[in-house]
Length: 405
Ligand SMILES: Cc1cc2nc3c(=O)[nH]c(=O)nc-3n(C[C@H](O)[C@H](O)[C@H](O)COP(=O)(O)OP(=O)(O)OC[C@H]3O[C@@H](n4cnc5c(N)ncnc54)[C@H](O)[C@@H]3O)c2cc1C
Image (spheres, rainbow, N blue to C red):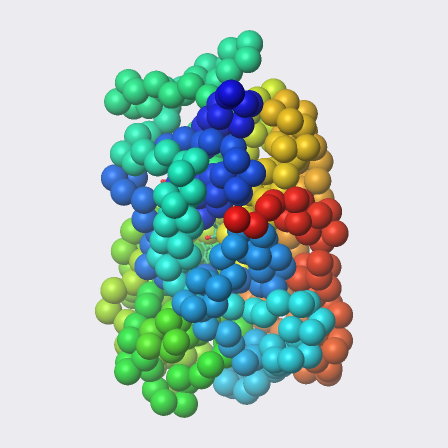
């Protein structure tokens, strides 16, 4: 006998958000079709930080063990002054942190996380995966959704999830609010073998140097054999959305006043990839009938809280739980899902902007920042993270509803 769960849900976008949505639905027995525009299902070669909040979700998806086998668990979050090189603050991520938030803080290669999700989707037997298909049009029917790709291929499903990222096509159909907003900040990212990193900085920490209109992040990946480097600076030179090899001369110019270790690390890198950072102001309606959005398509944020992918994973588990609660009434499920998510994701969007200002402060603001952060105890710091990393009862209830196979 067929059930509503056999009618596939269409998911546009096979990034971290789209694949997690497919997996979370599969674990509820719901079939899906993921449609990805890139020639293959793949993530960029860079690191990603996973806050303890996302481990509740990974637990429900039965991914804790494989993630733990691939992730690095840093000992501390460390912030240094980019000019003096002095330590401003340090938050230990050991036993007390894990006890407070029930889960660890992790660093993982994006490709490893993406591959795990892809493998779990394939294994589930409930997820179809098509690459090299760019969705260009959507047709809403009485009780189904049809999408068309640039190649003229058509897919039909009971509902549609737009997990198509910052430049979402589906968002323009559901919300229609134009392009995202460039922050005036540029990021360069690179991954280097540990042998390229000076011994002193081969730390097992998530560390970064913060300075006026710049900051620089350094953390280990894959048991410490690789290091992830991220340089961020303010710039008005680039067109929005430019994602290319950039202009390393500008990068070095912007970091010219920073301390010797930062400049030495920047010199090590020959090939950088550049991102022009964009976000949007939060909204509370990102669903219409049988169509909804997830991850960056719904609530793109600046990366200063390292939570964009984490939020997309939380979205996915929440959405799958709501689909089951609504027994296949997707319009009701998507309303309940956005209602459960918009204040949390909106808060992260807003706080990420504020953290960006905070990290890039100069003059008196910087002095105050260093003084305030320097005076904090680890307990103060953890109390300040409770809203983000603490258990979200609604979400863990959704997660608990996902049966472990
Ligand atoms: C510098 C930087 C550092 C970051 N660090 C962190 C971090 O440490 N921790 C964290 O949690 N987050 C971090 N983020 C944020 C995180 O990368 C994103 O929030 C996350 O990748 C969003 O996932 P997504 O699946 O929603 O979108 P995406 O990863 O953008 O995936 C969208 C997918 O949809 C596909 N697509 C787009 N349009 C179409 C179409 N029309 N048809 C078919 N397919 C389509 C794309 O090809 C892509 O594969 C960082 C971001 C940046 C820029």
